[in-house]
Length: 301
Ligand code: PMV
Image 1 (cartoon, rainbow, N blue to C red):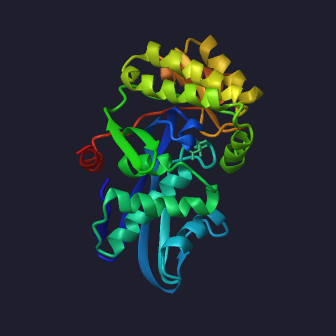
Image 2: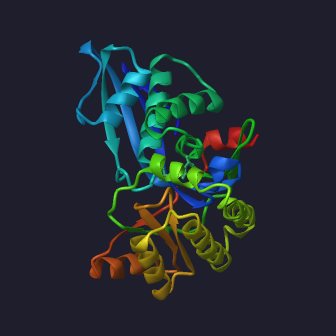
Protein backbone atom coordinates (compact mmCIF):
# COMPACT_ATOMS: atom_id res chain seq x y z
CA UNK A 1 0.00 0.00 0.00
CA UNK A 2 1.32 3.44 -0.89
CA UNK A 3 1.83 6.04 1.82
CA UNK A 4 -0.58 8.94 1.53
CA UNK A 5 -0.81 12.49 2.79
CA UNK A 6 -4.32 13.72 3.41
CA UNK A 7 -4.42 17.32 4.50
CA UNK A 8 -1.77 17.36 7.15
CA UNK A 9 -1.97 13.69 8.04
CA UNK A 10 0.69 11.40 6.62
CA UNK A 11 -0.07 7.70 6.57
CA UNK A 12 1.88 4.49 6.05
CA UNK A 13 1.22 0.76 6.35
CA UNK A 14 3.43 -2.22 7.19
CA UNK A 15 2.41 -5.86 6.79
CA UNK A 16 2.83 -8.64 9.32
CA UNK A 17 4.55 -11.82 8.19
CA UNK A 18 5.25 -15.43 8.81
CA UNK A 19 8.56 -17.04 7.91
CA UNK A 20 7.67 -20.10 5.85
CA UNK A 21 11.15 -21.64 5.63
CA UNK A 22 14.64 -20.54 6.63
CA UNK A 23 14.66 -18.72 9.99
CA UNK A 24 18.02 -18.62 11.78
CA UNK A 25 19.88 -19.88 8.67
CA UNK A 26 18.96 -16.54 7.06
CA UNK A 27 21.15 -14.78 9.64
CA UNK A 28 24.16 -16.62 8.11
CA UNK A 29 23.50 -15.75 4.48
CA UNK A 30 21.18 -18.59 3.48
CA UNK A 31 17.89 -17.75 1.77
CA UNK A 32 14.56 -17.65 3.57
CA UNK A 33 11.00 -17.50 2.31
CA UNK A 34 8.48 -15.32 4.10
CA UNK A 35 4.96 -14.33 3.30
CA UNK A 36 3.14 -11.12 4.16
CA UNK A 37 -0.16 -11.37 6.00
CA UNK A 38 -3.33 -9.42 5.39
CA UNK A 39 -2.78 -8.02 8.89
CA UNK A 40 -0.44 -5.23 9.84
CA UNK A 41 0.16 -1.83 11.38
CA UNK A 42 -1.10 1.54 10.12
CA UNK A 43 0.66 4.71 11.25
CA UNK A 44 -0.72 8.24 10.94
CA UNK A 45 1.47 11.24 11.73
CA UNK A 46 -0.23 14.57 12.55
CA UNK A 47 1.42 17.84 13.34
CA UNK A 48 0.72 19.16 16.84
CA UNK A 49 2.20 21.51 19.38
CA UNK A 50 4.43 19.94 22.00
CA UNK A 51 6.64 16.89 22.16
CA UNK A 52 6.29 14.13 19.60
CA UNK A 53 4.36 11.25 21.16
CA UNK A 54 2.06 8.37 20.31
CA UNK A 55 -1.67 9.07 20.84
CA UNK A 56 -1.86 5.76 22.72
CA UNK A 57 0.62 3.07 23.75
CA UNK A 58 2.65 5.45 25.89
CA UNK A 59 5.19 3.61 28.01
CA UNK A 60 5.60 0.97 25.31
CA UNK A 61 9.35 1.11 24.81
CA UNK A 62 9.22 -0.32 21.29
CA UNK A 63 6.66 2.20 20.09
CA UNK A 64 8.36 5.11 21.79
CA UNK A 65 11.83 3.99 20.69
CA UNK A 66 10.76 3.63 17.06
CA UNK A 67 9.13 7.07 17.08
CA UNK A 68 12.20 8.61 18.71
CA UNK A 69 14.47 6.99 16.13
CA UNK A 70 12.55 8.50 13.23
CA UNK A 71 10.73 11.72 14.06
CA UNK A 72 11.80 15.13 15.35
CA UNK A 73 11.56 15.49 19.11
CA UNK A 74 8.75 18.04 18.90
CA UNK A 75 5.73 18.62 16.77
CA UNK A 76 3.95 15.34 15.95
CA UNK A 77 1.32 13.00 17.22
CA UNK A 78 1.51 9.41 15.99
CA UNK A 79 -1.60 7.25 15.79
CA UNK A 80 -1.05 3.53 15.44
CA UNK A 81 -3.59 0.86 14.58
CA UNK A 82 -2.56 -2.77 14.58
CA UNK A 83 -4.30 -6.00 13.64
CA UNK A 84 -1.25 -8.05 14.69
CA UNK A 85 -0.65 -9.74 18.01
CA UNK A 86 2.63 -8.49 19.51
CA UNK A 87 5.60 -10.72 20.30
CA UNK A 88 4.24 -13.83 18.56
CA UNK A 89 6.68 -13.97 15.59
CA UNK A 90 4.15 -12.39 13.25
CA UNK A 91 6.35 -9.41 12.50
CA UNK A 92 4.56 -6.75 14.56
CA UNK A 93 7.69 -4.72 15.28
CA UNK A 94 8.90 -4.77 11.66
CA UNK A 95 5.37 -3.80 10.53
CA UNK A 96 5.46 -0.91 13.00
CA UNK A 97 8.85 0.23 11.67
CA UNK A 98 7.68 -0.08 8.04
CA UNK A 99 4.46 1.85 8.72
CA UNK A 100 6.40 4.61 10.46
CA UNK A 101 9.13 5.02 7.82
CA UNK A 102 6.46 5.18 5.11
CA UNK A 103 4.35 7.71 6.99
CA UNK A 104 7.47 9.74 7.72
CA UNK A 105 8.50 9.72 4.04
CA UNK A 106 4.95 10.80 3.13
CA UNK A 107 5.07 13.58 5.74
CA UNK A 108 8.18 14.94 4.06
CA UNK A 109 6.72 14.54 0.57
CA UNK A 110 9.57 12.18 -0.26
CA UNK A 111 9.27 9.34 -2.72
CA UNK A 112 11.92 7.02 -1.29
CA UNK A 113 13.07 3.78 -2.90
CA UNK A 114 12.44 0.38 -1.36
CA UNK A 115 16.15 0.14 -0.47
CA UNK A 116 16.08 3.47 1.39
CA UNK A 117 12.91 2.64 3.32
CA UNK A 118 14.24 -0.82 4.10
CA UNK A 119 17.47 0.61 5.49
CA UNK A 120 15.51 3.05 7.66
CA UNK A 121 13.05 0.44 8.96
CA UNK A 122 15.92 -1.91 9.61
CA UNK A 123 17.79 0.76 11.59
CA UNK A 124 14.72 1.18 13.82
CA UNK A 125 14.60 -2.57 14.39
CA UNK A 126 18.26 -2.79 15.29
CA UNK A 127 17.44 -0.72 18.40
CA UNK A 128 15.43 -3.75 19.64
CA UNK A 129 16.79 -6.87 18.00
CA UNK A 130 20.57 -6.59 17.88
CA UNK A 131 21.38 -8.23 14.55
CA UNK A 132 18.17 -9.05 12.72
CA UNK A 133 18.48 -10.31 9.14
CA UNK A 134 16.16 -7.62 7.77
CA UNK A 135 13.84 -10.19 6.17
CA UNK A 136 10.83 -9.03 8.20
CA UNK A 137 11.24 -5.44 7.01
CA UNK A 138 11.34 -6.46 3.38
CA UNK A 139 8.08 -8.37 3.78
CA UNK A 140 6.51 -5.60 5.87
CA UNK A 141 7.26 -3.06 3.14
CA UNK A 142 6.51 -5.17 0.08
CA UNK A 143 3.38 -7.00 1.27
CA UNK A 144 3.98 -10.17 -0.72
CA UNK A 145 5.63 -13.59 -0.53
CA UNK A 146 9.34 -13.29 -1.10
CA UNK A 147 12.71 -14.94 -1.12
CA UNK A 148 15.21 -13.04 0.94
CA UNK A 149 18.94 -13.42 1.27
CA UNK A 150 21.35 -11.22 3.05
CA UNK A 151 24.71 -11.44 1.33
CA UNK A 152 27.07 -8.59 0.64
CA UNK A 153 23.99 -6.81 -0.57
CA UNK A 154 20.34 -7.40 0.06
CA UNK A 155 18.66 -9.87 -2.31
CA UNK A 156 14.88 -9.66 -2.32
CA UNK A 157 12.84 -11.52 -4.89
CA UNK A 158 9.02 -11.27 -4.81
CA UNK A 159 7.31 -14.63 -5.45
CA UNK A 160 3.78 -15.39 -6.66
CA UNK A 161 1.06 -14.98 -4.01
CA UNK A 162 0.32 -18.03 -1.84
CA UNK A 163 -2.94 -19.68 -2.80
CA UNK A 164 -3.81 -20.78 0.74
CA UNK A 165 -4.15 -19.54 4.29
CA UNK A 166 -1.96 -20.81 7.12
CA UNK A 167 -3.00 -22.05 10.50
CA UNK A 168 -1.17 -20.29 13.33
CA UNK A 169 -1.02 -22.16 16.66
CA UNK A 170 0.22 -20.10 19.54
CA UNK A 171 2.27 -21.36 22.49
CA UNK A 172 1.27 -18.09 24.24
CA UNK A 173 4.86 -18.02 25.49
CA UNK A 174 6.89 -14.89 24.85
CA UNK A 175 9.93 -15.28 22.64
CA UNK A 176 13.15 -13.34 22.63
CA UNK A 177 14.60 -13.16 19.14
CA UNK A 178 17.88 -11.57 20.14
CA UNK A 179 18.52 -14.20 22.79
CA UNK A 180 17.64 -17.08 20.44
CA UNK A 181 19.91 -15.72 17.69
CA UNK A 182 22.72 -15.41 20.25
CA UNK A 183 22.12 -18.97 21.48
CA UNK A 184 22.43 -20.34 17.93
CA UNK A 185 25.61 -18.31 17.36
CA UNK A 186 27.08 -19.85 20.52
CA UNK A 187 26.36 -23.38 19.21
CA UNK A 188 28.33 -22.86 16.02
CA UNK A 189 30.17 -24.51 14.33
CA UNK A 190 28.44 -27.67 15.66
CA UNK A 191 25.07 -26.57 14.21
CA UNK A 192 26.45 -25.40 10.84
CA UNK A 193 25.35 -28.52 8.91
CA UNK A 194 21.78 -27.97 10.14
CA UNK A 195 21.88 -24.31 9.11
CA UNK A 196 23.06 -25.39 5.65
CA UNK A 197 20.24 -27.93 5.46
CA UNK A 198 17.70 -25.24 6.40
CA UNK A 199 19.11 -23.09 3.58
CA UNK A 200 18.69 -25.98 1.14
CA UNK A 201 15.09 -26.45 2.30
CA UNK A 202 14.37 -22.78 1.60
CA UNK A 203 15.79 -23.27 -1.92
CA UNK A 204 13.52 -26.24 -2.57
CA UNK A 205 10.47 -24.56 -1.01
CA UNK A 206 10.45 -21.99 -3.78
CA UNK A 207 9.16 -24.48 -6.33
CA UNK A 208 6.77 -26.10 -3.83
CA UNK A 209 4.77 -23.04 -2.81
CA UNK A 210 1.68 -24.21 -4.72
CA UNK A 211 1.83 -27.78 -3.43
CA UNK A 212 0.50 -28.32 0.11
CA UNK A 213 1.95 -31.85 0.35
CA UNK A 214 5.45 -31.01 -0.88
CA UNK A 215 5.59 -27.82 1.19
CA UNK A 216 4.26 -29.73 4.21
CA UNK A 217 7.19 -32.17 4.01
CA UNK A 218 9.57 -29.24 3.85
CA UNK A 219 7.87 -27.68 6.91
CA UNK A 220 8.29 -30.93 8.87
CA UNK A 221 11.96 -31.24 8.02
CA UNK A 222 12.56 -27.56 8.70
CA UNK A 223 11.02 -28.02 12.15
CA UNK A 224 13.31 -30.99 12.85
CA UNK A 225 16.36 -28.95 11.83
CA UNK A 226 15.25 -26.06 14.06
CA UNK A 227 14.93 -28.53 16.93
CA UNK A 228 18.48 -29.74 16.17
CA UNK A 229 19.88 -26.23 16.47
CA UNK A 230 18.15 -25.93 19.84
CA UNK A 231 15.39 -23.37 19.21
CA UNK A 232 12.32 -25.58 19.55
CA UNK A 233 10.89 -26.64 22.88
CA UNK A 234 8.23 -28.94 24.25
CA UNK A 235 5.21 -26.61 23.66
CA UNK A 236 6.32 -25.93 20.05
CA UNK A 237 6.95 -29.65 19.37
CA UNK A 238 3.60 -30.51 20.91
CA UNK A 239 1.67 -28.02 18.77
CA UNK A 240 3.44 -29.18 15.59
CA UNK A 241 2.65 -32.83 16.44
CA UNK A 242 -0.97 -31.89 17.26
CA UNK A 243 -1.36 -30.23 13.83
CA UNK A 244 0.06 -33.27 12.03
CA UNK A 245 -2.26 -35.59 13.97
CA UNK A 246 -5.17 -33.33 12.91
CA UNK A 247 -4.31 -33.83 9.25
CA UNK A 248 -1.90 -30.95 8.55
CA UNK A 249 0.38 -31.76 5.60
CA UNK A 250 3.21 -30.24 7.64
CA UNK A 251 3.91 -27.96 10.60
CA UNK A 252 6.86 -26.04 11.95
CA UNK A 253 7.76 -23.36 14.42
CA UNK A 254 7.97 -19.97 12.74
CA UNK A 255 10.27 -17.17 13.85
CA UNK A 256 13.01 -17.35 16.40
CA UNK A 257 11.54 -20.18 18.52
CA UNK A 258 11.75 -20.62 22.27
CA UNK A 259 8.08 -19.54 22.30
CA UNK A 260 5.88 -17.82 19.75
CA UNK A 261 4.00 -19.80 17.14
CA UNK A 262 3.76 -22.91 15.00
CA UNK A 263 2.45 -22.63 11.45
CA UNK A 264 0.61 -25.54 9.88
CA UNK A 265 -0.63 -26.33 6.39
CA UNK A 266 -4.15 -27.65 6.23
CA UNK A 267 -6.72 -28.23 3.49
CA UNK A 268 -9.30 -26.93 5.99
CA UNK A 269 -7.64 -24.11 7.94
CA UNK A 270 -10.91 -22.84 9.48
CA UNK A 271 -11.83 -26.35 10.67
CA UNK A 272 -8.39 -26.88 12.20
CA UNK A 273 -8.55 -23.54 14.02
CA UNK A 274 -12.02 -24.41 15.37
CA UNK A 275 -10.75 -27.76 16.67
CA UNK A 276 -7.71 -26.13 18.22
CA UNK A 277 -9.83 -23.58 20.04
CA UNK A 278 -12.21 -26.28 21.28
CA UNK A 279 -9.16 -27.98 22.80
CA UNK A 280 -7.97 -24.78 24.44
CA UNK A 281 -5.20 -24.01 21.96
CA UNK A 282 -4.87 -20.36 20.92
CA UNK A 283 -5.13 -20.43 17.13
CA UNK A 284 -5.96 -18.28 14.14
CA UNK A 285 -6.18 -18.44 10.39
CA UNK A 286 -3.50 -16.23 8.81
CA UNK A 287 -4.42 -15.22 5.30
CA UNK A 288 -1.63 -14.03 3.04
CA UNK A 289 -1.71 -10.46 1.74
CA UNK A 290 -2.84 -10.30 -1.86
CA UNK A 291 0.73 -9.73 -2.94
CA UNK A 292 -0.06 -7.61 -5.94
CA UNK A 293 1.63 -4.50 -4.61
CA UNK A 294 3.07 -1.97 -6.97
CA UNK A 295 6.22 -2.03 -4.85
CA UNK A 296 6.71 -5.76 -5.21
CA UNK A 297 6.41 -5.36 -8.98
CA UNK A 298 9.01 -2.59 -8.94
CA UNK A 299 11.50 -4.65 -6.95
CA UNK A 300 10.88 -7.64 -9.22
CA UNK A 301 11.83 -5.32 -12.08
O1 PMV B 1 10.89 -14.36 15.77
P1 PMV B 1 10.97 -13.40 14.63
O2 PMV B 1 9.72 -13.31 13.85
O3 PMV B 1 11.53 -12.08 15.05
O4 PMV B 1 11.97 -14.04 13.56
C1 PMV B 1 13.32 -14.16 13.79
C2 PMV B 1 13.95 -14.80 12.60
C3 PMV B 1 15.44 -15.06 12.75
O5 PMV B 1 15.89 -15.67 11.55
C4 PMV B 1 15.68 -16.02 13.91
C5 PMV B 1 16.22 -13.78 13.01
C6 PMV B 1 16.24 -12.84 11.82
O6 PMV B 1 16.57 -11.67 12.07
O7 PMV B 1 16.01 -13.25 10.67
